[in-house]
Image (cartoon, rainbow, N blue to C red; front, side, top):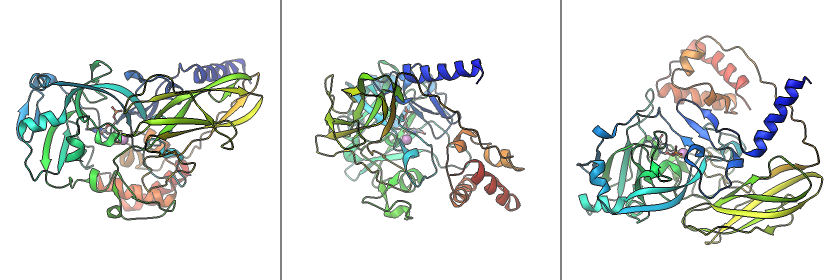
Length: 434
Ligand SMILES: Nc1nc2c(c(=O)[nH]1)N[C@H]1C(S)=C(S)[C@@H](COP(=O)(O)O)O[C@H]1N2
Ligand SMILES: [Mo]
């Protein structure tokens, strides 16, 4: 090995262990950024380390001509600021967090651990705003729309909340995240904060709120963000109307430290745990692959919806070990050892084994060789007009799954001629296959 190569590997390892890494780019456009697992260690996630999930290009919104339309009434930001101020700490987790761990795999952003963060959100109660404009007695759902524009013929990102969740005193319209105005990526100037519920309900760049008598009929309610209400066999096929919308998060925890390697001695196993409206009560750690469990300390003070830090002192001896953390909430729900498989890969919360090597010297890491295959004619025009190759590089799909993806994408406006479809499929299944 050349000395520059050796130095590169060393710095790579050092970066992974010291937490001086970078956000992981799943897709630059639309922007999807994942937080490296070693940063999931403090109670509050700094905004610049907070994951980003966008279905569309980030819209540029100017406050001067921005208004929020609520059931036909237009409100300026100044008018909103005159409502009583509301403030809370809450986890925001993408429903797809952990999708890459499901077997068999499925299409979608291949998140690992870090599509989750915890922030302080400041704004007003949605309930106060709705009561001011008046909630008609037939209203059952509240629809939200943001300023982002769909790509191609992809349906506009609109979702509704049941009235009960919308009127809950902890559901906010927030303009601040961690004490600063929302950044463009996180929804400037205003977003929904739906504590305890998955990120797809936290609509960004809000422009319009509507009262509905039924759940919103759009694609993002009736097709996407649905999962089975009861257990299903991994890999089974079901129709979307047999599924129910994703709502509450699951109880979950991640180990942020140690990294893949540590020296023998006392090693602090630490990270964060979170849940839904039922706070984390207990976190246990296993250092022997799940045979024995040890209660972790829960430093800091609990918040209803926020991260709960955990720490456990492990007497680590040389060898290869498997660490697992397992959280339980006040309702008695505990992370399962096996994930609940579902067709779109939502709400992964299995207690995740993490391999750790304990030794006096760092193990060598061998980078994987990329699978190089030449792209067929038309690939660029068909696939890379709306998104970048990052999106596909993450997928691990079979030929049949890529076939369904092409059908979905052509429905959203991608141009794939019949005579080129076969070659495109061969390429996708080889280059971005299982
Ligand atoms: N208008 C709009 N709101 C949106 C989205 C979007 O694409 N458009 N993505 C949603 C999803 S799926 C998630 S997980 C969260 C992510 O919020 P963040 O980017 O601030 O972390 O925003 C939600 N709000
Ligand atoms: Mo999400």
